[in-house]
Every structure is written in C-alpha cells, then in structure tokens.
Amino acid sequence: MTDLTELYQQVILDHNRHPRNFGMLEDANRRAEGNNPLCGDHLTVHVRMDGDCLADLRFEGSGCAISRASASLMTAAVKGKRPAEVEDLRRRFQAMVMADPALPVDASGLGKLGALAGVRAFPARVKCATLPWHTLRAALDDTPAPVSTE
Amino acid sequence: MTPAAVASTTVAVGHDVARIRRDFPLLQTRVRGRPLVYLDNAATSQKPQSVIDTLTRYYRAENANIHRGVYDLSERATDAYEAVRVRAQRFLRAREAREIIFVRGTTEAINLVAGTFGRVAVGRGDEVVVSALEHHSNIVPWQLLCESRSATLRVIPMTDAGELELDQLETLLGPRTRLLAVTHVSNALGTINPVKEIIARAHARNVPVLVDGAQAAPHGPVDVTDLDCDFYAVSGHKMFGPTGIGLLYGKAARLEAMPPYQGGGDMIRSVSFERTEYALIPAKFEAGTPHIAGVIGLGAAIDYLQGLDWTAAQAHEADLLQYATASLTAVPGLRIIGTARHKAAVVSFVMDGIHAHDIGTVADQLGIAIRAGHHCAQPIMTRLGVPATARASFAFYNTREEIDVLGGALRQAQKIFGT
Image (cartoon, rainbow over all chains, first blue to last red; front, top):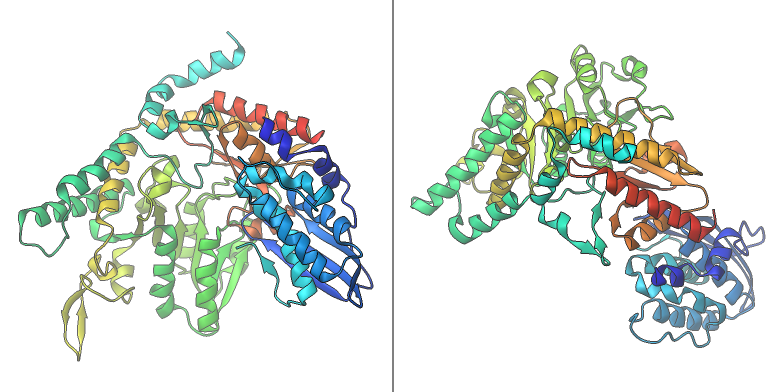
C-alpha cells in the first residue's frame, strides 16, 4: 500500500476535491482541449496572455484525481510565468513522472508539483498527470486541434 | 459457517469452480504479491490449458499451410482446420458448416458484412439501424458505410436502465432500412437484448439482422438457427480461445449473394487477367493464408465450452451477478450503471468523489483486474451522463470470494479518498 499512499498524497487529494483555478476564464485569449481517449478524461485550459506573461489561466473538464490534481497544481505553478519558464517546468515535471521508480525523486525547481512524483510507480497513470501540461503547451502554441494522449 | 459460505456451497453443486479454475493456469498467478482476481472477462477471457496445449502442439508437430499441399502434414493441417468449422457450426447451431467464415474477430466480421453485403444492399438515401447499446465496432463500420453511400444511420434509443426502447422499432424500421445491427449482450452494461424478438420484428419488415455476439458466446449456448439472424459475429479470445480469431455466421443464401471481401489466394476458382471466378462459400471470404493456429486453438476452446454443464455454469454466473449487485449496492455512494432486468454477469458502476480510473488503480494494488473507462461505448456513457465507469465482468470461473476482495478494494478507495 506504500505506493498508493505515495500516489494519493494529501496534496493531491486536496487539489482533486478542491481544484484551484477551476472553471471558465471569460477574457481568455488562448485555449486548448486535451483528451485521453482511453479513460475518457478531457479538459480545457483557458489562458490569458498579457504580452509575454501568462497573466491568468483556468481549467475545466472531468477526469481522475491524478489529472485534476495535476491540472490544479499546474495552474497554480505557472501563473505569472513566461512561456519559456513554463516549458522548462513542463520538461522537469515530465522527467519526474517518467523517472525510474528505483531512483531517488528529483523534484528540483518543481515546488508543490513534486507531490505528483508517486505517479512514476504507475506507468498507466503517467498520461493522466501529463495531459494538462500538453494541453497548456497547445494553448500557448495556439494549436487548433485538440491534444490527445494517444 | 457464514451465510455466504453456505450459499456458495449450494451453488457449487454441478459447477465445481475450484476444479474449473485449475484448468486456467493464469488464474493461479499472483499480482503484486496477491492472488490475481481477474474481473475483466468482457475485455478478454483467460485460456484453459487445453487451448494453450493445442496451440503449442500445432506449432511443434502439425504446422503446414492448408488447402494446397499434397503432402501428409498439409493434409492433416487442412483436416484439423476444416474440422473446427464443423465444430463451430455445431457450437452456433448453424445449419451448414459453409455458413461459418473464419475472421480475426467480431470487429472484422462486422466490417466484412459492411464491406460486402452493405456495399451492395445500401445505396443513396437508404438507412441502417443500430442500437444505443452498441460497442464502437458495431457503430463505426456502419457509419463509414453510410458516409460512403450517402445513407443514414438510425439508432434505437435506450432507457436510463440500459434497456432498448423497442416500441421505437416500428418507426425506425422503414421502407429504406437495409439492415439492423444489434448487440446480443452489451459489453458496457451487461444488458441482454431480446434479439429473437427484435429479429422477428425486423424480418416482418424484410430487414435482415446482424447480431454482435461477442459478449453472448462466453456466457452460454447460442442457436443462430433458432434466432433466425442473418449474421452472427463472435470473437475467439472472449470465449476462452486465442486472440486474432473469430467467427462470422451468415445464412448461406446471404453469403452466396455477397461479393468477396478481400482478394487473394484461396478465394478464387480460376484467375486470368481478363476474368476471375470466385470460390464458393466459405472460401470466397477467406483470402490468403488464414490464422490456422488460431482456428485450431479456437476449436479447443469450443470443445472446452461444450464440455461444461451450462445449466450449472449459468446458475453460477447468475449467482455471481446477484451477489456482486448486492455487495456493490451496499457500498455507500456507489451507483450501478445499467440495471436492465435481463443482464449477463457484468457490473458497471461509479462512486461519489472517486473517478473510475482511480478505482481501477486502487483495485490493481490488491491484485484485482477491472476495467475503467468508456468501454469502447462512448455513446452509452454520453446517454447516461457519466464520463467513465468501473466495470467488473465475470466468467464461470469467478467466485464470490473474489467479489469480496473487490468490495474490500472499494472500501480501501473510500478510505484513501475520504469519501
């Protein structure tokens, strides 16, 4: 059960139950949709860019605890950042959740996002954690087609 | 003895689950240090040792191409292959062996009918009718066909319980309806459709019927002659046989009138650059070297199924369904999705505050294999307003004890999620 406790940490359960930045963003100027066709998760990320600054963002949709918590933690982590910084965070995050579970966790520079490190022991769930990040990237790139994990 | 133990002893009469489980080596394995609890039979079933041995023996001692060699090994492979056709005919209670076509699975069987029968029968302005309970494999081939023919796909609606609204049938089956394609048993909800009645009503309007039998064949005898369906499709791997092999039953007159499916060797009588004459059925629909090992393995699965006491096996499955329904209903915040009066042993459910995917992960930690998602039936999920469900689907080798393990996992999930 230790893996489960590590996966479903209090931070994750809290963000699942009370997601931050959840809902529609009326004055968004970028948005993208993400889907996981295997489990039916889907989310929309709304972004308001102010020059080169990610001034505000919100997400909505339905998904499992991992994808909701990941989206919620992501929105909190990237607000106010520039796209290049967001991309750096995304890369670090992806490396953390795809790392070999036998190695020590490297959550450097990830702050609260480190709570999702437990995902690396659950290969089937990695896509749940990374879907919000891929969707955010699509929004920042202004990609018109929905993002899919498959 | 607890009341549950008494009841399960009663059920075991005529259906010795412990003995049957020993026939399935994979059921003896452990997952994450715990005995495997395999409750994903609607996705694929486990294989008895006899099927595994038959496949091994074929490759070790009998492998040769069929229908063409003059040598002993090829003749034996041909005989073994064609003998399975006869066993499949008896298994589905078809009138003739030539009404059985070997295909990759239910999906290919449906695509075969859409691409041959459909191509001829469905034209501009015509209609194909499916039901709200279909798996994507009995929707998309008809959508593709309708798109290419400028035809219309119509859908028999269903109730909140997951039963088809058959009073709609009279309006849906019109003068332009060229085919009705309907599932025998729903993979997502377990609903058993009254296909015999549906077929009779469609035939009264001269509409031929294809039945998707993928989820019916693993749960008991099928009689295509009694059903009077025009086509019936099954997958080997869902009925304890190998993957990559399945059966399409078609009435001989229908199959004879249809154009070929794929072109190639074995499906011809003579070929010249000017003109090719096609072989008679069933060869007309089996171009190229088929999945010989798969067919022979499927034969072993059919033998295994025919060796079971189905009255007892079905009573056992009915008991599992009733026990699972009662156990899961007792879990607070759990809602069963699909409450049809006639159901196969499939229980789809959702839980307050816990997504199906998370239920699946917690169950997996306890060695339980269940399915989480839309079960390749997104229109059902949309109709019932749920993004995904968790699904436990049973076979004759499952036990009440395994349902208890699942119940424990659901309580564990509620503890983790604080619901």
